[in-house]
Amino acid sequence: MARSRQSRIGRQPSQLRIKLIPPLTVVIGSMITALPIITDYPILPPMGLLVILAWRLIRPGYWAVWAGFPLGLIDDIFSGQPFGSAAFLWSVIFILLETLDRKAVRRDYWQDWLIASAAIIIVLIGGMLIVDFRSNMLRLDLLLPQILLSVLLYPFVARLIGAIDNWRVAS
Image 1 (cartoon, rainbow, N blue to C red):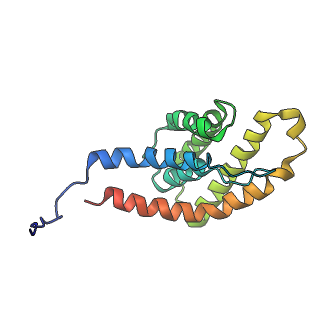
Image 2: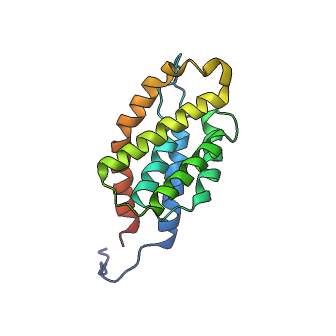
């Protein structure tokens, strides 16, 4: 049986899809870190962080400043970090990004990548220092592979989130 196709002109996208997809993708990104990959050193990028940074830099006005806190708590559940560490660090990053956005400076792709890279470095080093400040103070070289992989993976994640965002707002 053939179904008649209605014109998409003038139709609005589903409000459920518009509101639910961004936080859902962040939660799914955070769940990726729970994969059973066993290594001696941290190597797996913090996918929840990469996803939320991509959303925040692609759609600056979408997230409220406080949104980093509950999504960071969810990330803490899956990442194994001390409870509240990602919530704190993501909140700090969101406050810094909000401050940067208030300057009303127009950014391009390279500047977004630089901003995301700085945020990734801050969160990873901050997370390592929260776990054990005294013994990790001089062991930042352990994070170098994870930082490099995360920074190099960010453009791919941003492109994926851009495609998801296009689908999300399409009618």
